[in-house]
Amino acid sequence: MTLFCRGCVAAWIAASVSVWSPAAPLPASVPPSPVSPEAFVAEVLERNPERRFYEAEITLARTSARLATQLPPPEISGSVGRKRTTDLAGQLAGEGVAWSAGVSQTFEWPGRLGLRKAIANRDVILAELGYARFTHALAARARSLALGLACATEKARVAGEAAERFRALREVLVQRDPAGIAPVLEIRVLEAMELSLRRKAAQADLGVRTLRADLNPLRGEPSDQALDILLIEPALGPVPNLETVLAAAQTNNFELRVRVVELEQQGFRVQLSRNERWPAFTVGTHYSEERSDARDQMVGIGVSFPLPLWRNTAVRTEAAEARRVQAATVLATARRDLERRIVIAVRGYEARTAELARWRGDTVEQFRSAAELADRHYRLGAVPVATYVELQKQYYEAVESVLETRREILEDAQEIEQLSGVPVLGHANPQPATP
Image (cartoon, rainbow, N blue to C red; front, side):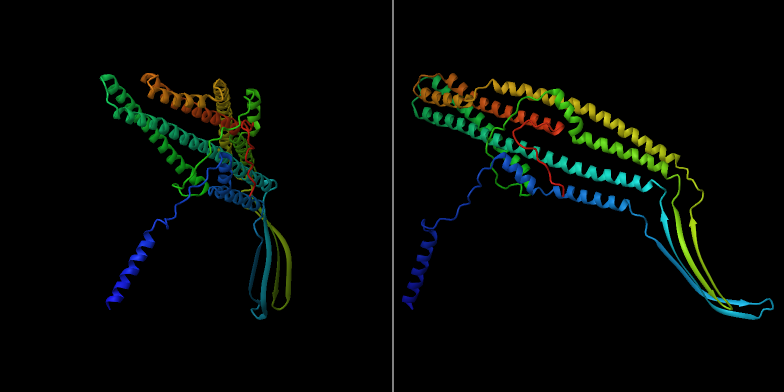
């Protein structure tokens, strides 16, 4: 019995050692590989769950368009009874079955179905425009947020890098024997700059988490899903001509096209209201047969319509005309607002690209090298603390300025593309397939 217990204890110890042995580490989760902004945009366009709503809207509009041209189904009527025939003296002359049957069809006034079809077809066009507008807006939003995520990640990295330099240098100075007040004050300056940069790094990291929470639902993923975007500068085209952009917007702008279709549709509604002065009419055939002392048969055709023959639709026509005037006013307002937004976007793109062109391509790298050089020489006593602190701070601010300028240029370029359809960025505009 003792030997058995000792064997159990030994086996348990061996099993415990094998479980907690460093030779069997727990599997670590592998972070996802960073993706390019354009690859992420393609993924969003493929997997976004909200696109199904607009696809269903198109299906619904097409179904309504098919139903708008259909006449009401024909109606079948019938009756059956018994007939008794007597002479003037009251004597029964004969009796038998009497029955009748008929088929009738209601027809609309000429031109009415065509107007209803035109109105329904405009609903289909509006649904397709809504789908295309959503797709373009979705691509622009995904591209903008993706670049924002990449910029926030880079700002957090640079702020953390500069803060780490201040921390390491401060620890070195603390270990020395400070002689006088100057070294103590330098330590406090370095500590203050470290705290400031740590705060900026924390803010940038919070921005990264917030942008991930905004980006992941666009592709149907949980908000806290890990996501990294490569920092790739968008390919920028030349500043477009303002007159060319304004002219293209008159035919390519989604908002303007929707307003034009709505105005056309409202015009058809006015015509339909006027057409509805005349009622629909019903044409039918009937057959009847009666048997008593003789056999009577009758075949005929009939037409029926409600009275009066014309309807007082002046109120409805006036209301439809008022809505048409409103639609025309909204279209004119949309044109003026479109022109204003295009001017702002084009001028902003022109000013910011000119600002970015003044920066050398290696500006950020030079600031990084200067910050590292200042760190080495400050340790040797060749650089004063003011120069060191200023270089570290300017390194972060230079990176922030370049990233923010690129992000603003992307916003302006996408605004121009959304408003006019004129390509500015070096990518193909998403063309949604009609479902």
